[in-house]
Image (cartoon, rainbow, N blue to C red; front, top):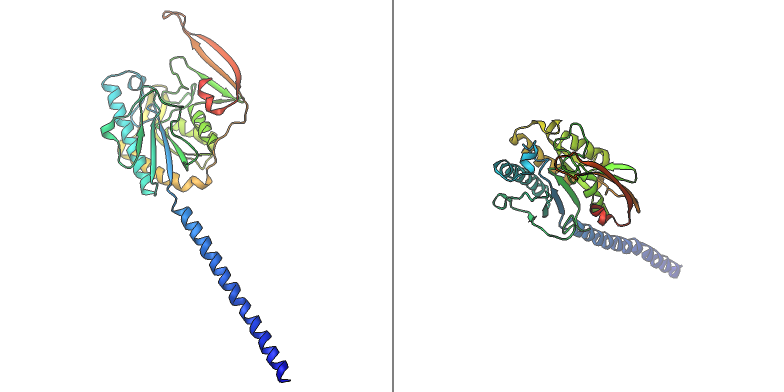
Length: 296
């Protein structure tokens, strides 16, 4: 009897030690998972900003974006104000690495007006349409953007060239510069998280990228060179707040992708004489690599 009682106690002791071992194992596993999650949370957040000039606050006529002179210089300052507001908003949201690309054809950065806390890329030539963009970025912002060619209420609307009035279709869908930039970013699985420009540009962004992409309208188009402008204090505050919301929206935003191969069509004007109107030309083809989208 005594031996049996001893065996029972021993068995009971063995049974009671098992939960303790499991608890220690679970605690260790939880600690490892916590460290892993903490390391992910500590990963620096990177945001890529591609800019244009036509969609900046206060810009509404081609003399501001095409021609060198006082109007153009002032428009560049307007753009730098918009950039500064977005950079401040991103930094307030915890973004630690911000790259800003000068995407305007004739270049539009004013170095002494660059907001601290970001790195700025300008000048030509440079490799690729979105220099230094890769899959390490958490999101892309299209700042100072404009609507595609032919948009009735799009301020300074065009696609690539306002002079030759280019229009593009990819897999049967007419697309502007918003979709072009987003598709290249989509190649790297980088979502477009925010778009700024006029009301028409914001509408186009929602159509292509969905409602989770944050949009900030800094003016409302009346015609191609007429707009209802908003005070800069208001647009800058909206841009700063929009940047914060865009960071929070990253988990819900999805990269914009085009199915390959891309069936492409382009229409544009050819001017055979300065005294005659342009002749519309159309070409069609297949694009095998989305990174070559802009060269079609």
